[in-house]
Structures are given as C-alpha cells and as structure tokens.
Image 1 (cartoon, rainbow, N blue to C red):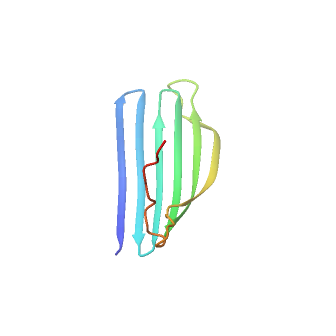
Image 2 (image 1 turned 180 degrees about the horizontal axis):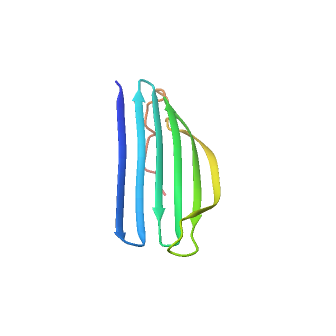
Image 3 (image 1 turned 90 degrees about the vertical axis):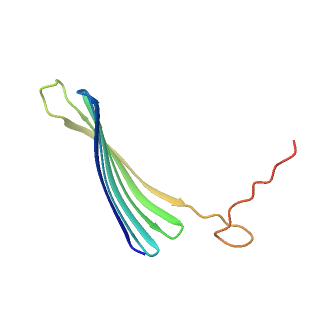
Length: 111
C-alpha cells in the first residue's frame, strides 16, 4: 500500500502570534518518510522546528533542528540568531516470548 499526505496550516490568535505547520509524508511498503516544518512567531521572537524522519519496520531514524530568529523592533524583519540540532533513533517494537509484535504484559503487582 502506498500513501501520501501533504499538510499546510496557518493559525493566529492575534497580531502578535502566528503558528504554521508544513508537513509531507510518504508511506510505501516497509518504509515511511516524513518531513515537517513548524514555525511559531511572537512579536519579537520566532522559533522554527524542522524534522526529517524515516521509519523502516520498527526503527525510526531522524534529525531535528531548531532555529531561533529575533528582531529588535516591530518594523524590522526577523534575523537568525542560532541553530541547535540533534539526530534521533527510536525502536518502536516490543519483544516478547512470541516475537516482536507482541505487546508487553501488564500484570498487576501485589504490594
């Protein structure tokens, strides 16, 4: 099965706050690819979060980056003041006596 998803949204509650999300996802057998940008803007600061991920079976590998923008006055454009980034790896499988797909048991414990 092949799937494709495209998202583009913009939201604001007043003239000093703006939030936008742009995302693209592609799913093909065994592999899921995802890219997204989330931007949150206030009057003097803007934070941009970028994420790229690939999921192969039970392993998710990705990279996340944050960029901070500031402006000195409301009439100026935002200027970049730094970036921070890190790689990600996640294992989303449960290992049990019957194999990888088994959910972990949640037996009640006596105090």
